[in-house]
Structures are given as C-alpha cells and as structure tokens.
View 1 (cartoon, rainbow, N blue to C red):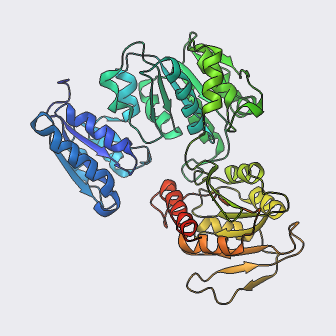
View 2 (cartoon, helix red, strand yellow):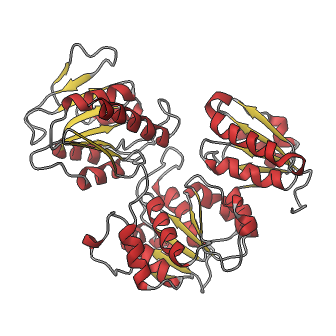
View 3 (tube, rainbow, N blue to C red):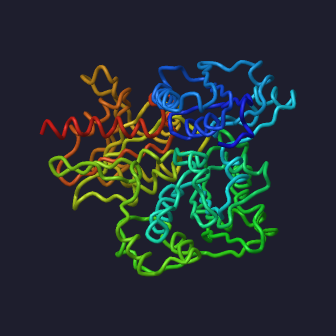
Length: 469
C-alpha cells in the first residue's frame, strides 16, 4: 500500500450515484487516508453509493483509513482543514467552497488528474458532445480481443483510480472524458497519448458562458499532446476547433473505414474506433469481428421491448436537442406507423427550435416531462390550436391538435408529471407499426436522480405493461 496519503485529510467533494465518486473514495481509503465525503444530496438520495462504501470499509477493516460523510450541505471548515480536495465532475469551478480552499492554500485535484499523474501506460482518451460513450466502449471492446487486461473507465461512472494498482506499462487504457474532467486534467498539463473527439455540438451552456468556452474545454484533450501523440477527429469538429488546432502538435487522423455500414449493428464513430485499434496493433479480422458483435450501450437508442407490434426505445442519454433530433431521424416506424416521442425536462440553455421542427415533421404524438426545457419546447408550438383533454387526472395531461404540422392527420401533445403516466399514455396512443422513443433532448434534474434513473424508470413501466399483455 502506498504511504503518500496515509493519515492525510482528503475531502471528496461530490459523491454522486455512479461509481466514480465511490471509486475515488476507495482509492484514498486503501492508502490509509482520512477521507471526508461531502455532497449536497441527502443520505437517502445517495444511499446506493454510501452502501457500497460502507461494505468496502467493513471488508477493508484496519488496513483502510477513516471514512466520514457530510451530506445535504458543505461546511467551510472542512475545506480549510484538508490536505487535499478532490473536485467531482459535477462541481463547478466557481464553487465558493473551492474558492475558500484556494484562499487557504489547499490543493485541489480530480480523480482523472491523479490517475494521469500515476499511470505508467499510455492513455486513450475519448470526448465529444454525443457518441463518446459508445465510441469509447467500442474501442475498449476491440482492444479487449487482443489485450485481455484492457481497462475502460472515466465518465461512464467508473473511476480509473480503482484500477491504478494493476496497470502495467503495456496495459491498454480507454477513458471517456467529459469537458469538466478535461478541465481538471489541464491542471497537470497532460493529454492522452491518443485523443479522440467524436463531435462538437451546442451543449452544457448552463455551465459555460458560450459555445466557444465549451469548445475550448473540449480542445484541452489535445492541448498538451506532443509530436509523437495522435488526435483522431471528424471534419465537422475540426471546423469548430480550427483556432485551437493551429498550435496542435499531434498527428491528426480523420477516420479509417474497413466495413460497409450494413456490416455493423450500431450507428456511431466506427472509423474512429478502427483508427485507434490500428494504432494499437489490432489485426483487421479482430476489428471486424468486434464491430460486428458490438450491440451498443444501454440507454442509447436501445430497443427494450416490443408490445403488440409497437417497438419501445430507451434513448435517455439524449440530454440535448441535437441528440433527440438524431434519434427521430434514426429510429423508423414500420410502414405507416408513427413516432411517439417522450421528451422534455431541464434546460441547459440550449435552442430547441430545430428539435421542434423535426418533431412537427416526423412525430405523431409528443409526451412531455416537466421542466423548463419543456416550456421552451412548447413555446415553439405557440401558433398551434390548444385544448385541454379531459379525463386524464392526475397527470393534468394537455394536448395540441393540428392537421397542418405533421403528415399524420392528428398531432397530439401531452404534458405529464410521472413516468408511469408517460408510458400509459404512450401505450394507449400506440398501434401496430408505431415506435415509442424516450429521447428527451434535455437533462433529467428534478423528477429523476439522473438520466440513467430516467431510463430505468421508463424501462420498468414498459415491462409492467409487457408482462400484463
């Protein structure tokens, strides 16, 4: 066990419900640190993560350091007395508690930063506005065919620090990296050996002052690369990153195609994954086999059920309008069937104009979850006749009807307040050949713990109906 953190006071700011915060906490506990986990969420909200840590601490016993929790609030003194503060991905840089730590000369780092500083192997980093999880997972699945000890971690909800003790110089490491994680990594002036940018779309404008600031954060993935490193990027992203690429030192690769589109089961950045695999020495026959076998990730245009000839898709990770537009254009109903879209939620200061236009063109029924993004989406339908549909209590469902906005003769729009009501209305409005798509185009804050909880609730309600029919 490494001794450099023994008896040091470590503050983990932001536990979260994915395993990233828990993995980071385990790393410091194994090294004998005195760990304080603080989060604005309550014990009840965070119980799945807390339970994992309590079980780990019990199994680890006296070999591990002390573990404490401060939940539902942060305390200033905790940030004054610490030896190190670990900033979670969801914690903004302008947090007053981080500012207080800086004022008191307390160092701040992230799990990704600490991992890069300690990792003995070259790292493959994948970022982008859409498709980074699927692309990173595909790269990992290809590499796993040849390198059995390959590791996949990062923004998928797994802290790479959970794996740091077993990594050798030859280990292949794939990290999905968010813009926030890249900002934390910039403190170390490090970038991955192979950097992949899937795309750059308007996203997270609730956290960044404008699109340029967001693009700048994404560009950090290659900012500190050297001449022997590689940047794999698509030409659309190159347009948005042009000014940042002027000083780029790595070799730039666009994509490599070895399969026709009909040869693989998922849509995504196959060419980028292929380019990474070839750089890592994977044979072409293994690449083809991996791509053909890859079925994608949960919650990403995932078909979860078919009930009475109606297909149900979970695309809950579509947290921006562009992603919902992609789903609308990718998932097709059968013959004369219609699209029933479930959308809306919390706004991230994004434009819903194009999404509204695509809904008008392609959808027959729109079911809206509560939130300020929903209000913005509705405002794009303000010229449509509006009437309240009676008899839908307790959901207080509403609908619009118009013959002019869609190829369908009746376009319906509902506002509901629970996932149970969402699925009930979708089921009652569906007929054979239709597709029901949960592709919100917005964040999940408020009604759900996160986008994965949203998807799980959707799947749970769909399965209830499936088992009844």
